[in-house]
Image 1 (cartoon, rainbow, N blue to C red):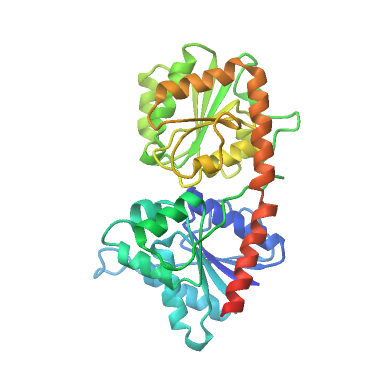
Image 2: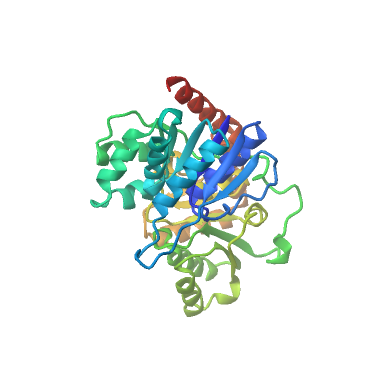
Amino acid sequence: MRIGITCYPTYGGSGVVATELGLELAQRGHDIHFISYAVPVRMTDTHNRLHFHEVEVVNYPLFDHPPYTLALASQMYNVAVNERLDLLHVHYAIPHSVSAYLARAMLGEQRIPFVTTLHGTDITLVGANRSYLPMTRFSIEESNGVTAISEYLRQVTMAEFGIRRPVEVIPNFVNCDVFKPADGVSQRDDYASPKEKILIHLSNFRPVKRVTDVLEVFARVRRQIPAKLFMIGDGPDRVLAEWLARDLGVERDVIFFGKQNQVQSLLNCGDVFILPSEMESFGLAALEAMACGVPVVCSRVGGISEVVRDGAEGFLAPVRDIETMAQQTLEIFHNPDLQQRMGQAARARALAEFCSTKIIPLYENLYQRVLEER
């Protein structure tokens, strides 16, 4: 198949999943055309079936804001015609599904179907805004296929938007051949002594990720046990996190790595991964850590409980409950057998439920059904 994929080319979960999906599909013989304003951050392969088409937005004094939705629709139309695409797959409803609807309409008799994948904040935050809700509902209803990354998100979509069409759950995934435990060699010794434990956080450092809670948890852990904290990623709350690390007196034990394309080598250094988010529709970063055999401590919110079973692959705690998360982290740090058992369970769950080899065929089947219905 010849598939056009549109996503935000950033470090958020939707962009990562969309990019990894394209990479996996290319490996399986499909021609993949990414259509976005920048190259997706994890599009590091040079496979001959991978292509990128930049969306150029015209800046004109009449426009207070560049009309990206229209520019994207035009580029989708151009790529569909020039590359003879079979379908479009857009990730994140706003504004990508709207642009896909316009592109499909412009194609007339040649029009191609489009699939929309809902990732979370496009429904729970942006799409639920009353000014966007009618358009979000319309573009979802007009999609030829709709998927959500968790049962939680599917239920929210159906309830909040009154969607009448079916929404299929296809969970996020991880390449278990890339994200896997270190084979006896890791970078751990470069950052910590053998007596120190390593706590890891990975996100886009937006307020919903509650990165300050990560620092508060670490400060409590650090009072009782030698440890280091890896902060992987970047975003609006990074400066606040750096300030808090200094204020708490732990700045020498906190390493800010910034944005990283290949995070698996850093995850392999970890003893515990922490994700204290205000909301997560799935928790992809936690899954990547689990695939590397790292126990996780997460907020009990959204779709995380569909990924992490409390007491099995790690622990779940109420949002903002810093004391409980610190105690859970210390429990794992103090008990090597528990850490090993949870790490093995985390890897096993990733292998059994969320490997790309199991999830990518679900998308291929969906594409085939959509094309047949057309």
